[in-house]
Length: 352
Image (cartoon, rainbow, N blue to C red; front, side):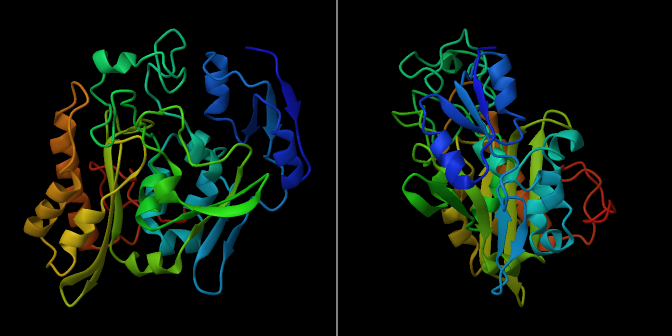
């Protein structure tokens, strides 16, 4: 491991000032960053520890019913918060389907948004990777790529974003609050993560030195709480990233879909909001026919980036199943294996 400075600032302003030095980066829980440092993929000159900054570890409900979640709130604390789990059950389900209980107990909201791709070539310093070393090439294009992107990829990068948490967040129009050298601003989560295009090294819309301080879920998202699910297909049931996943939510009235929310995970370099599929669903009666049309719309622009054509059909099927589960209604208890198509109900309480 390379030598680096370690700083623990006392305020957000101090943190922003400390990270201005070239080669500096923020440290939250470190569940991703420290692993990358150990294998030589990330080599910061300075770590600015934000884990003890005041005011970043609270869940704040607003008068309008929206919620502001501090950047340093732990994944498990958010997933098991009684009011949050009841109001945004698909988000809670996604949180509990990610990583392991031990990691969820330390991993943070902001760290989840900022985690790097799990592409094996990105994580191997000896491999060519345009995301890690711009202009070097992409070994994944001709390598082991069965789990890589089917949407939004380019010849420069075919990696996927690994987050479960971000998939329902993007469906519910979540906004990211940041603070940096130029002050405070907000970024819609839908535009927070970048597709690779010609510049795969640019992974987010953050400007240099900007720090995530919170995320904000709008009150409107609560209207879907009776019919919202997250479904994740992985190569093993526990502690694995998604091959494909889907967050689905429906607003039903008199047997008709008034509004729909749909997003996919494991398919692109960002959580993928399927807006055209949502439009297809509005005004339809919930059922296989409508859900299949939505799935086709969601994957209309999909194409293999390698040996992964199967993921397109898999994503269609996971979309139909997630919508069907949402139509059945949000269960009163969390499944014993949250997010898994192999889970059974009954499970455990949302707040157990």
